[in-house]
Structure formats: structure tokens, C-alpha cells
Length: 351
Image (cartoon, helix red, strand yellow):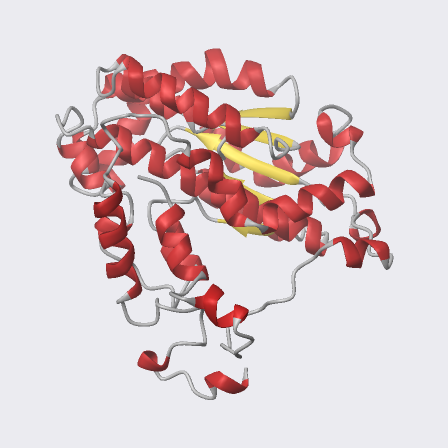
């Protein structure tokens, strides 16, 4: 299952095309979007950039403290902080921000995963591909913000590092090889559209310490996570992700105690030259094309809906249509924000 049906529910309405063809005013939401005309009239992305008009991500195992460090960096360097994308990211950035039932969010949950990671219905892979899709959507939102405003962004994890969790799932027998192959295809098709982070910060917290923090701070179901799964996450970070991402991005690594010395982290960031990776090859023309891509979230997510048969995540067309219609029946979800009379929106036909 993908985010496609849900996004369609946000952006479209039944019979809209026919009404437009009849030249009837249907009061659809038409937010001004950046396009070729703005570029032709002289709008340039690089004019908005400053020293820290960049993409930073903070990575690490569970309970490593990445959120606090990411927020601190964003505040100190006047960047925008994006909290980690979870399975409800789309809910939070659309409609009225209310959290919807799991059937509208990949039919998965972290609680089910921790309670039964080897669930025979394929739940673990549904969770992981749904999280990847939400990370991809958030990354596109972050790039859109950077290119539109010039303000740098700091995220917790990204679609580039997401695979460490799938790798750990596979090594622990939670998902099968077919799921891994599908994930790799989807990731390859979707990540090529965007650019990797300028900087990745990795917080290295040993698994015993992670387990201790989960026991002290975690939710009841999180405490069921195995140390073997956490160790597999750490191993994939160190053996695969960090070596790979270092070819295109700056990398800073810290122990848990070093990450607490946040002013020192800022000094380290300020000393970087940022002279590697594909960002160095970009110009206003390429930024123009990238901005057009990332503002079109349906286009960004389109590769994740590739027609590849994977039983763990596939649902039938009829079931998809029923789910789509149920989504549109929710309060405030039939039309774009501000155009739903059922939640008190007024003067709709004058907008």
C-alpha cells in the first residue's frame, strides 16, 4: 500500500475534470506554485542562499538523542528543524493535522511490530515501506523549504539511511528476500530524483546503553525490542550507510557524551568546507528543475507505487477504491483545507 490513494483524497474531488470542461467554477484550491514563468521572470534560488542553506541529517540507533541535537543545531544556525517522520507524518501536514486510523496509514503500527516482528501477515515490511515513503515525503518537503526560502533544514534520519532498519529486519528474519529486493527497487527509483544531505551526523550509542535508555524511557511495547535487532541496526550504519554516504556527504561521528557537547558540534560544523557531493554541481537551472519536482508530492511518491507484486503490501483495486472513498468521508478530508463545509469552512465559493 502506498500514500498515493490518500494524497489523491487530499488533492482531488469526484467529477472535477468534467466540471472544469464545462467551464463551471468549482472553487478548487489553486495555490500558486513555482514554475517556469517565475524562473523566466528572474527568480533564482542561489540568490536566497547563505552559508547554512544546506540539508543536515542526524542519525543513530534508537534513543541516541538525535532529536535534541538536531533541534539545537537548527536553533543555533537559524535552520528549520524537522522532527523524525513517523507513520502519521502525512496526517500531521495535511487537513487539520489530526491523527487518523492505521487503515489510512499503511495498516501498520510500531506497537504491532515490537509485539510481533515475525507477524505472518507481512506487517513488518508494510511498516518499513510506509516509513520509507513518509521519510521520502518529508525529505521532499524539506528540500522544497530550502529551495523556496533559502533557509537550511535539519532532519532526524532520511530516506538515505532508512535502509538500515530493513537490513536489520532481514537479518533477524522479520522480512524475506522478496521484500528486500522490492525495497531496493523502490529506493533506487525514488532517491535519484533528489539530492543527498550536505552533512550526516551520526551519534554512536552502544547497544547496551540503548537498551538501558529504552528500559528507562521507552513505551511498554518498545521494551520488547531485541538487542540483536539493535545490534544489526548499528552494524548496518557502520558497515554500509556511513561508508556509502561519505562519498557524497560530509560525515561527523560522535559518541553519546561527545554529542552532549553541542557547542563543540557547532564548531565542527562551521569548520567544514562542504566541497563534496552533487550539490557542488548544481546551478540555478538545475535548482529550478529540482524545485519543480519536490513541490509536486505526487510525482515524488510516484515511484513508490510501481506495479511490482509483493504480497506483504499489495491490496486489490476494489479495496483501494473503498479505502479512498472512506478517507474522503472523514471530516474535513473530502476537499482541500479551507474548502470543507462539514467542518465549518465558510465562503467556499468565493475563494
